[in-house]
Length: 55
Image 1 (cartoon, helix red, strand yellow):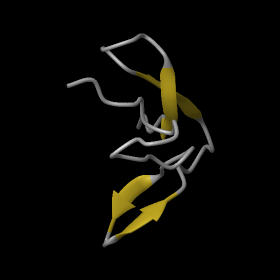
Image 2: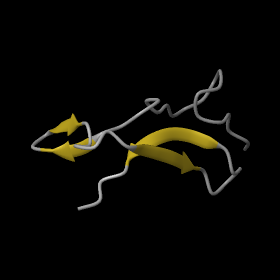
Image 3: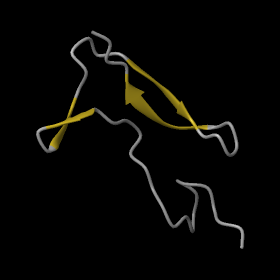
Image 4: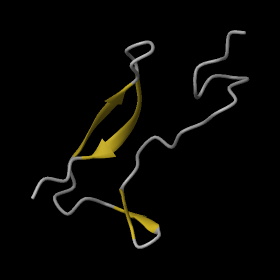
């Protein structure tokens, strides 16, 4: 069976456009406000942004 890509019509899964760090039960923006693209290993396309949280 072939599934629709996340975000496409008929997809069985969906993602937010951007995530924060999951701290204390909620998503929190990174302190420096930096994000980077999360690339799917399946098709090489960006499907969301995730926080860049370096010390």
